[in-house]
Amino acid sequence: MNLMRKPLYLLFLVTFLSCNQKNKKQAEKYSPYQEIAFVSDRDGNSEIYMMDVNGDSLKRLTNNESLDFSPDWGKDGASVYFYSKRDGNEEIYSVNTKSTEVTRITDHPAKDVLPTPSPDGKLIVFMSDRDSLSRNVYVMDKDGSNIRSLTKNKMYEESPSWSPNGKNILFTRQLRDSTDNTHAANGEIHIMNADGSNVRRLTNKKGYDSGAKFSPDGKKIAFYGLNDRQWDLYIMDADGSNLVNLTNDSIECYSPDWSPDGEWLVYTAGSKGNYNIWKINILTKERIQLTDTDGRNEGPVWRN
Image (cartoon, rainbow, N blue to C red; front, side, top):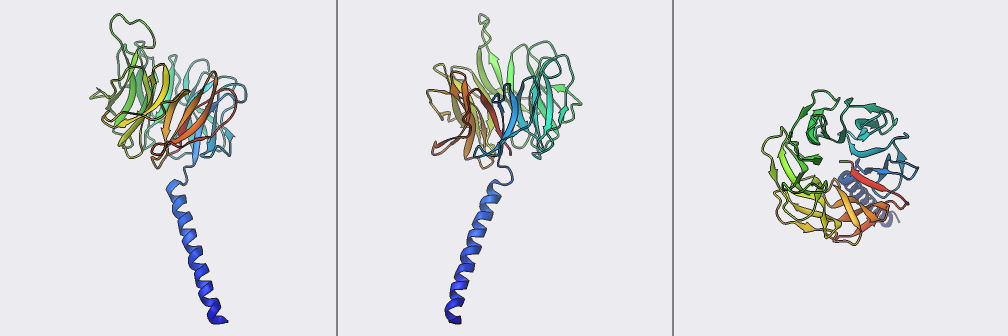
């Protein structure tokens, strides 16, 4: 009997250890960053929320009568940066994801919006019209000090984001000819060095392009753009080549952000005032809906 039980015990032990190791590897692959921050008006006005990557464990991070927009994770995941008009005009804030305590970062009569922390957590790139030219790209230390402009022109710019190594910044710049007086001129994705030098254009397609984000390995860029009056998600190589329409959908798709493993994009999709958070596998194009409420759920960012 003992001779029979020993092999069975060893088989059970090997199977247990194998499964445990497999689960450990899967946890290491994604852990601890299984969280997504986003904006939702489900409780009456636009607030910052967070949830897990399956759409569960919802937590409200802000609670203010004003509107809060454009969340992005701090380096350690302990805070989320956003902008709000809660003190009279658009300023940049951070919220602690555990205590939900809000800290004001900028304090200027101009509009400071769209904050994105650098990969090392030391800097924040953002947009501002504080030079009275147009909305340009700025950078500051994470505490709001040492503010300096990276671009300085009359062309409208938006959606700055960092490369994974912190050496480059992506952004959208509106390009228009001398006879075009519309706001929605042709927006194209540009890239520059982190100090504002060596600005070069990456996209050259019809329609407005924005929201560009590098993949975690820095080899791909995802963004959203107009395609026959419809917003779709696109992916291209880091040099602007090999452009692919990922969604080609009948509903609006915008604001993509990469999963830490580079296999998925989380994004906003919807129409007629109802928008929800989805994720799509960039290879299989499998889509999974993460939120399902009336109103607007948008601007998702994956914790990296």
